[in-house]
Figure 1 (cartoon, one colour):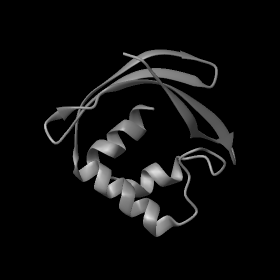
Figure 2 (cartoon, rainbow, N blue to C red; figure 1 turned 90 degrees about the vertical axis):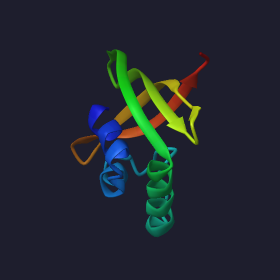
Figure 3 (cartoon, rainbow, N blue to C red; figure 1 turned 120 degrees about the vertical axis):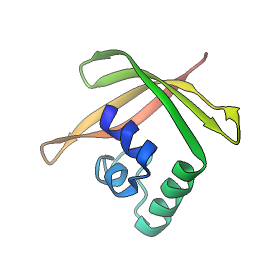
Length: 98
């Protein structure tokens, strides 16, 4: 979880892509479009803080503090990770009301 947040903050689209489960909700088989979308999101977002709120089994609850266009776009999410070829990868997430 922390490594993916750091990768977003640093604009490391390739890392985000390889740590996303191929059956997950954010996976895009069009790698060029997917990479461009990730890079654009990273470029237009200021990543301030990540707080891990809890972890249980394959789920991690976290709070990400982010700003886009000077606007607070922070969110809390429960992320689900699943194994693929022996590695844990992001599968999907559900944002919680704040």
